[in-house]
Amino acid sequence: MRLSPLAAIAATSLLALSAMPAAAQRRFTTEWTVLPELQAEFALRGNDYLLVGFNLARPVEVDNAYNVDPGFQFRLGYERFWNPNWSWGATFRVGRNAYGGNGDFLNMPGSIVPGLLLRHSSKIGPLRFSQRLAAEYATSFVILGDSPPNRALARLRLGLDHEFGLGSTLKLRPRLSYEVLTYLRFQRDEDQAKEQFVDLGGLRGELGVRLSPRFDLTPWVASQTSYMKALDQFDVNGNRVSGGNFRFVTPVVGLDLRVTLGRAALDADRQPLPTQH
Image 1 (cartoon, rainbow, N blue to C red):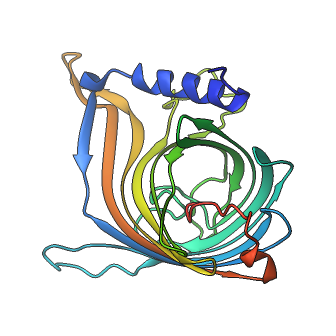
Image 2 (image 1 turned 180 degrees about the vertical axis):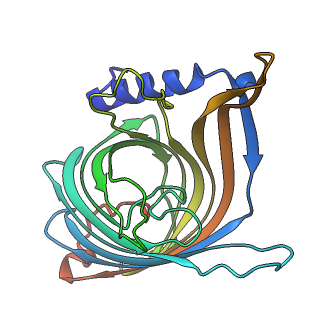
């Protein structure tokens, strides 16, 4: 099978990530987070759509020793299909997360995040293989004079899914996806600390349940990872006492509820995307 341009980029990114020495990284697992989302998708001609979504994110506190305000995200999206295999779109997200950034990645900073995306899909046997490449710019609200720096970033998501029909309207869509995010570093100073090549990653498994052309729900689980490189610290004898590479892994469980509006939603040949647009 010949690789598309997006697949070539995907292979390069995944090889770079796998080349990171696992033994040199320290791994920490944080609490489970729950992330429900409501979506309204406005079906346009063909497979085009407008999307409005709202979600909440909250860690599951085992000991209830402290209270954490839930984070939230409001997002808009538009996607235009050139043909059944290629499309482009624009996204805009606004949100807040009191415990470490907001966005599709829990540890991603940014209160306002506009972006553009390019998508390609093809067939691998009975499976649908999708590739989504996005460029975004994350900027933050200034709170008490302190906020994370604004960052340009690139995201690449790969997905495999297959749809099964059960009866006249019920359809099941199991799906597995993996996404990586990297901040774009322009003109890094020579004395500036070197950062990770991949900053965030997420592996997600889901089961889409399409009850009708207008309503579907998708329960899912995911493992989100944030990568960090800290400056090395040495004692008086020159031995390293801290610093190095770290991985922070957050298990996530979610449920997407989607309502599809518009007359085009009833078109027999319409191919809706998974709820993880």
